[in-house]
Length: 398
Image 1 (cartoon, rainbow, N blue to C red):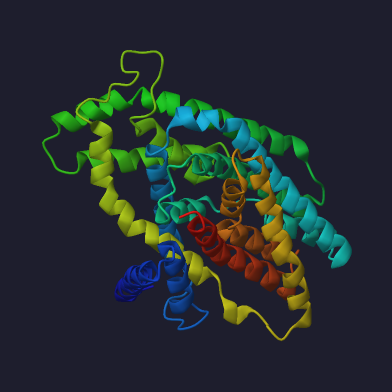
Image 2 (image 1 turned 120 degrees about the horizontal axis):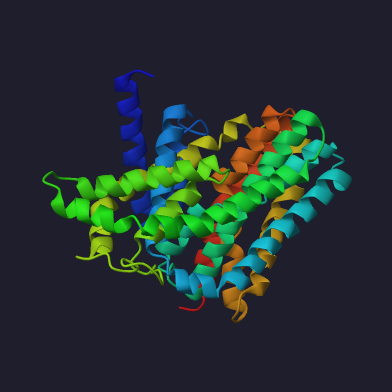
């Protein structure tokens, strides 16, 4: 892509994201839904002025890293730990229920091949943490207790999803499920989640000292972005999603995360966390909408043969199972029916996670065109429907 073409398309993405977010906000709908809709509008589904290209995926990856960094900075680790058992039950139910339901339906109702059934079920394992977090922020519910439960569950969901994806890709190559590498990968990821924030926290005083002595502008946000990228890379090296590394970076820089040892266990001095948050906020607000627009661009409705009866049959079976399988995970949330419903609905959106599985299924040869289209269509429905359902349930108590 030439430079003028890139600049024009980036301009279209940014303007479309901002305009759609404003329109949806005026309609009292979550802004994230507007940004995804903007992607559908300008992408291959409708106007086709912006296509799916690697450069935009890279920009969107930066956006999701920054979003999870911001979430980490706002996360109270002590409170998150208190909901750990709850989050684990929500996550495991949200993985097991849709996987079992969709695999069984794919294999025995739709009579899909074994590998295709595995990839179809895998596409609905993980929750799109980016979609969920942004919707809760739009609804001003990101600091509620159920939101902490959802956040913990979504992180665990993502970890399990990555392990399952790796196992499925390996299965498609060697035609055998190897559990040991998957379990080893899961152990490494969990160790990273526990150890990385502690180790990183010990380096924070040096970042603070460098920022105080710096004679040039931009040292603080530059150091924060460098830390995000370093931990994202470290996460990838241990087999975890890069977003987990960004989340860890946010936790390490959070004023709410303190160690019980060392001379700098909690002392950041001069409100370093607030200064980092203020200096990175404009960067986050610029890149995060790009991620959601690219999610919309990635959903190409024109590639779906809506006249294909097999497509409608697959979609009609997958859609309710994908939504119900996640929604029932809310039963473990403490509180009344509304809290359980909000928790379960928050786990529904698949977003970019489901699209990655769908693409992997197509690349491996497990999916034919009808299966691929139905999986993408169902992923799109869960992504678009969840914010509307959350809005409707949240409004009932206000």
